[in-house]
Length: 540
Image (tube, rainbow, N blue to C red; front, side, top):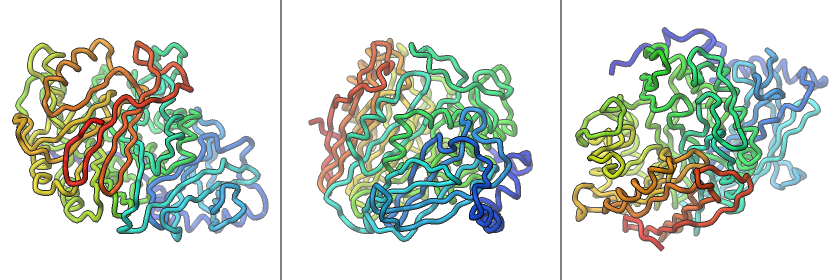
């Protein structure tokens, strides 16, 4: 589809020269001197209540740095803070949890253009070390956060552990999974999308956890910048989520619900009574992307310009693991089959990644220094036929099944590079799966070129009535090794130079698929191992 000139259709409130200058650091430099001077003379912020209601977070670890994040939001669900002032926020970094051994400090500007969110890109730290940090504005002090840098380049550490999650629907249960990840003490958290859901309040949860309402023109859908900001803020008031952000660095990517269900590039996939034009939808997408950046510990390189945002990137942990973080929404072509489950050819063209990102992926794997190469992405990569569910052959066009040629190119690329240990980690489908990735999914004897692990949701439901039907389809699929649609939770991965271990961790889940106990304990439902140089999942 021909790409629109998006800059010409955006209102000034979404992409302004002031915002652009702030993103590049120019405006911050111009304003910071005046603000620091005022700050030194006393609390000039105008804050009258505690501003760190959304906690603190860190992310994007490198061997010598990390991103620190917070947002000043004394009234988090109603705009955060309505002040039009830019305010100087101090940050402090220490090598001890009590902050008695300071290492770095500085001042960063919180501006109304960015919802008074700040992103501090630390440098000069030591590899593979814990650090503690906090923010201060006037007499208000944030909680103390903990973070960790990545190992030194090329260092083949003995072990690396990460947890990956997706599909955290506030209205469908408690985030008990997040509580349990804390006890597992991973090195980093990977969120694969659907960090929030864009629907209007329609909670079926017994405890009636309602989300914020939208003020935009479409019923049942966030559309405006204030809509998305308030929803992000509400999620970050959740104690379990806030604590997980406070204690561990995160690597994030989005799927669809951070903007709108099943959207594809500039195409509005949901009919809310009036289908948006591409121009209208790109205005909505710009709002969603801006709010996402404002609330995530991302680098300035990901600062959106209008409806465009650079999110695919690589994050490396020594010589053991490299994450190729993908974006399968912003550049994809429209889903086939009218975005409906059904029968369609699996060798269709179209793209999930776009040409530039696809080539970037190939270059990254080819030149990777890491033992394990992890494709951190959103939708099921393996081929899966939902025959037992539909009563006839049928596939999900929103998954890689709808983009068969794009997938086949990646499989063909992996085939002679199986020793690079490509492992795909996936979210989206509210259920846990394990797959051997075949060069030809229709031939069980075909070469296994990689492995895929799919996490269940944190809370979002998988239709209870479909579980036995999908189980039947899974058992009839030779390259499928595991399916669990009944329980919510997360996935824990432990890597060594010789093995990759995946533990599917689940929390107590009610019969209707909801997590009704915020303190539900986790257990391991299944475990798999992948051997270095031998693609494919083996159940323990």
